[in-house]
Length: 370
Image (cartoon, rainbow, N blue to C red):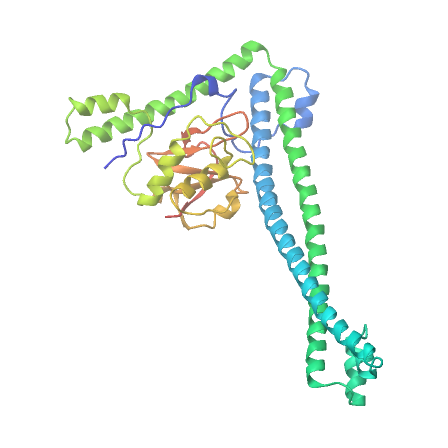
């Protein structure tokens, strides 16, 4: 039974300057593009596509670093809390021993055994006291408790310090990746600014036409499925459904939760791409897929590389609606299979969530999550 959800289509106002995806790496380099004072429209498009592909790759690295930052911060906070609790317990133990010492002093002076007991060197105390026979079993137990807590505190303080250093390093890494992303976006915009207004209009129209063709192909497939569902009827309610359905069909095959995730992703058609974002109103590529599956009750890792190991790998011919689809040799991009050769994805900065052909980028493999 075909799905009859009608997620909104991207408005023309959201259409980007040119195609949402990059093909294989082109020979034109940044240096050669910069050296040419008058690059052609196609040269600019190729170079900007290449830059955006690099941005998506760095974005996934950025997402991974942000995820690590959260984990390290949580661990450091746990250690700091443990150190604070341990220090409080240690202070209480020392205070109780101090009370005993004070009582002995008031009653005629501090016994030699208690002098040793309050030594700053618990190991030395135990060694001396056992030799002199001046330690009771209860005192030895208390001192060993203090000794254990001191060692634990020292280890926790050291680990907390290491975690804080790693946190600082990770934050520097995140800043560096943000700077790299911004640098490439600036370079892309500089190249686009070198085109004439007419050339930019042509690129925008070409992309709009490409997306319109994809939407029309999807609508034709949906009309065919609707007629099949209605027993071949070409009139009545079936005709009305066919004329209003615009989303690619969610064909039979995906599990219930996969279909739910797919429907949620489709509901975000037209939402802007923002690197590092995982919804609910803006997304990057892995942010869209992780958010959509979360709505279906399935937790996915944050990055495309990690999501590639979140289920069973399938070939392109085995794809079912809701399967994740991965692109480029570095697995730097992920989308979700819709059916009939279409995917839904958040492509790159300056664009929005929309449909594309499954082979519009270098396809690597699919992953069935549910």
